Image 1 (tube, one colour):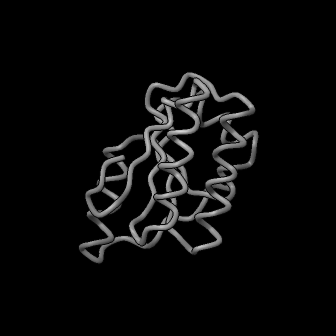
Image 2 (tube, rainbow, N blue to C red):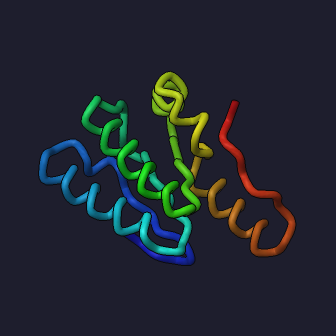
Length: 119
């Protein structure tokens, strides 16, 4: 987890049981903070049902606290999975970390409206 006015959780580590526990802890800790929570899917080729369940649990905690959450898909396959599971209808999905940084820079400079989930 990296903090720079936002909290980034690298979801690619959630492939093993130990990795899922670590990512779960980071997601839930991030959801409790006032910083925006960024879930980075770099290095993920796909998502299995346990990973989707983990993501939904964390998103439930974050939205219950009115935390800002953004997903960074990186790949078309992850974007499709987020669309099929309808997660992208609940949480904004960006395509790259560069796009995420530009978004926060724009918001900080008062030039951008908040992101809304894709329809």
